[in-house]
Figure 1 (cartoon, helix red, strand yellow):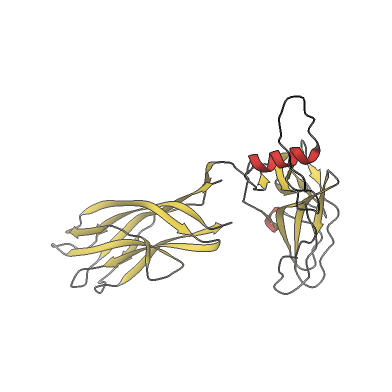
Figure 2 (cartoon, rainbow, N blue to C red):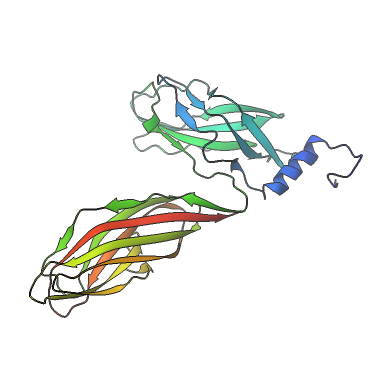
Length: 291
């Protein structure tokens, strides 16, 4: 058993004590300290290596007898070892930083070629995953389109991670829509590294396209992955004789880890059919991370 207290005057501090201090300040998390650092990129002339940009990261020291966390850094582009060419099937490789006896090094963990390749299992300890490279069959040179950097930076406290947004200014027209019929007017793909709260908002411009006093009553909803259950309740609206109005709604949505689709739908609530035009459809999202 061992214990200690860090930062007392006149007491020397060894590597283990520093690692525990870093671990405490980082709240046990690992990753890039800023999302733009340690980015895996192709060479200026694509070849069989990739480069990692300047940056700083936190690597948990999970090796036997270590504990705590390392701070790793580089101040210029850093080249990986050679990446083997693929044969007749595509392959997924993973780029990591591994710390061995206090020395960081880049590694490329090679996957198994397959028609639908999966990421390889990373063995050992003291590493930080930077990117996945999906290499097509019979390929030697690595291009940017093949590289997917991890998007999980280490950021202490309350942070905002900008998720994608969509804006479509074209018109979506519904003609003689039956009551309670639903139409999707916009979708947004969103990738979550982990389950998290996301602040989302959407807006649409609604205009009835019939004349002569035709009514078109409806409501808007935001749905997740096509499930017929709103994750964000919408607004009711009533349109008469080519009226126009803009509807904007925002709120908090909890989205699990993985790739998901947000869908903005319009539901017709009038007792009879009617025509309506939906324009300027948009969905925006910002992920709020704590810790």
